Amino acid sequence: TSVPPISFSPLPVFEHAGIITTLLGALIGLCHQALTAPLILTVEALEQTLLHDADHARNPQQQADLLAQRGQLHPFAGHFSDRMLDALADALARLREPIAPVVAAATPPPGPGMRCVCLVAEHEVDRDLLLTEMVRREALRSANALNLLGQRLGVVAGAPAFEADTLPLAPQALCAMVRKLAEQDALSAEVQMALYRSFERQVLERLGNVLDRANALLAQHGILPGLVYTPYL
Image 1: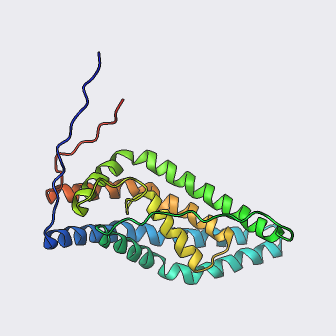
Image 2: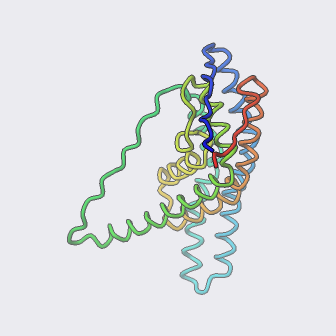
Image 3: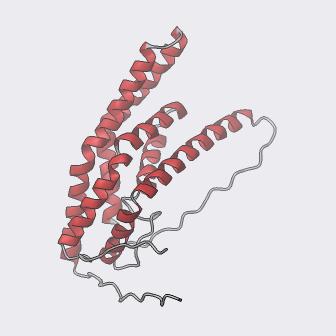
């Protein structure tokens, strides 16, 4: 027996600037409240890990390398949470702007004398694989909340529902923000990898609760209060 397709009524669109500003302001405030401590813990735990590894280094050279990495991380750690929250607030504030397409950079073919470039490329591959796995794990854990929030933020933006790869609070967006900050401060490949792992433990594993709170906040403000996500089987 075939099941008839389910039809959906058009989603309401909120056009009043004051309402939108209030909603986005409340959402940004929630993010500050929920994510400040995990973001601070991300870099604090990473610094402690590097210090512990240095204390248990096998030789003086390894110890010196680890202490140098910790020294490189210290100025980055001081402003990490503020910069992340600013980036997130900016993404939410620009929610109604058109989404720019992502254009992949072309990779030049290897040539003579490219050994160092290949080594850098290997680090980039390792980093990309790590970030991809982090996103995949959290997207699976929070699939329901991400779908609901994508629908609700679509209403706020007066646009179709946001997919996971364009949703400001999705793991894809958060990991991209962390990566951008790490690259801006020219953190070494080893420190970046350790930073991403710490970010997953301290922030991404708590993200489901943040998404649930964001959905509850928008529902309380009348954004699709009865919305339920049922996976298609």
